[in-house]
Length: 235
Image 1 (tube, rainbow, N blue to C red):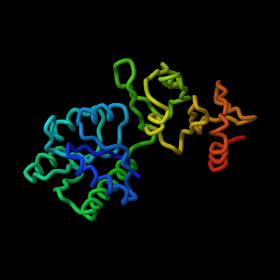
Image 2 (cartoon, helix red, strand yellow; image 1 turned 60 degrees about the vertical axis):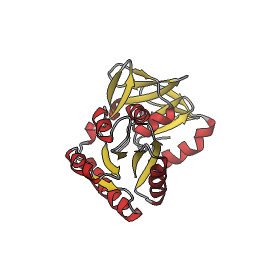
Image 3 (tube, one colour; image 1 turned 180 degrees about the horizontal axis):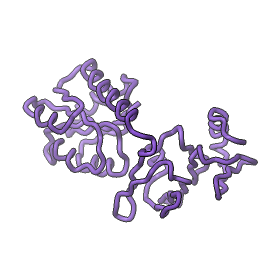
Image 4 (cartoon, rainbow, N blue to C red; image 1 turned 30 degrees about the vertical axis):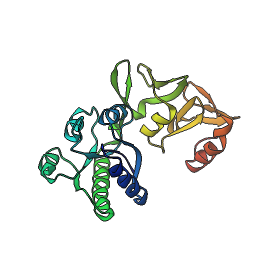
């Protein structure tokens, strides 16, 4: 599935997209926004794969919003004004949905985005997979394979980085898990997320990483055991 949000100043239009997303198995709708400013703030912290973006909004147009984003995303423009189509496609939009649109037309656009996403993933070397984390008033690019451990510190997370400076960021456990591939990372405790490939052993509810021991929380134990059995991790 590809993740998305929808931005439109008209709540009924968002309801339509929300309903269509529930019917489409290729896409996961994370949130909807009537405020472009709130959407930009969300995307700075929680990037998604795809935006459903209205063009004609009073405070800021969808085209202006797209230009303000710090992290790229696919976009499907939605509007009742066909005259915006050319400018939308000039910004490499995946598609352009003219309101009102049917579920069949919506699904056609989603399929385009899904196919394009899979194409880009297949043509991106694994070594170049990164996440972006905002900390210390800047956007930090972190190579996924360099993450050694993620540790919860009250309202902050400490990201332990291989051979580098650890990063302390104001983000939730849920928020960072949404950025990470779920086949590579697992939450094992209310305060810890571990990279599965870096587990050396598991013994008596303790995970041994390279130089760190991490406890397994009671409420996470059953799900974690299923994971290590699935991936044949050392016990």
